[in-house]
Image (cartoon, rainbow, N blue to C red; front, side):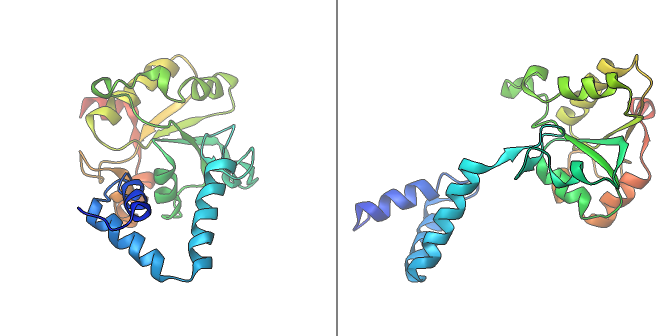
Length: 205
């Protein structure tokens, strides 16, 4: 792809590094921004700069937050004895959209994947185990995507906390095996939270 401007080329190259954005799509986006009012482009650049520089991760659940604690963890109406274990913030958003869950979350920040060089030490598992050890948590819901890596992560955590008095369950397999949670429709996902099953039962299926 030949460019008449080095500035344009640099902008397209940077934009094309985003997931799912090729060079042609990046060029369309950059040209679109050039056609917009200058202030709009500056607002976009400022928003991206601020989110990179000022975003926090909740010290309790590790979800993305503006403050030390996220809004969900600060909400006194949430059931603090019930924790839903998810891979990342997109899963939190997906489950929240169902309006079927009133507990708290714990964001692992990924899933165990030896092929990708991701082990338990790379995830927010120790803080979850510590929550269980403190005794306030009565049930963990494993809401990882129903993939081999998700099941491996669930089982690893289960082994870490099985000696403590905590119920473990997993979302019902109305979510098709192999699917990513964030792409599941809200009705199916909501029902899978409500119809969750004991984790030990899921090991036998």
